[in-house]
Image: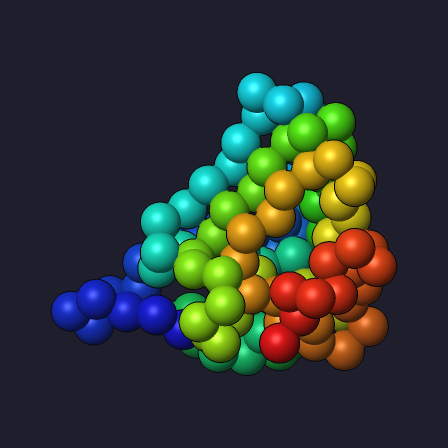
Length: 124
């Protein structure tokens, strides 16, 4: 987890709480979802390092999330290639990008999370 002055910086969460679900579609060449170099994204069940307050694994169990990037859309979280996870794809999470889309950031797969084959080079 990244912090500045003890405070977490920038989070985008798709499918957060227990048995909840979320969907994010980034579609079209003029579509961009972007965070700064300290931003993080969580898809599906959250990794333990991102829990807040008194939340536990039970708070997030069963969450599902799906992010699809298509038709030249772009997703950018953090800094690609620095070895620090920017995009977490947890249990129940999927990250799918078409060949003509752009994803910038280091991806960490946790449990049963899935990413499209063209993103495997970004997985750390």
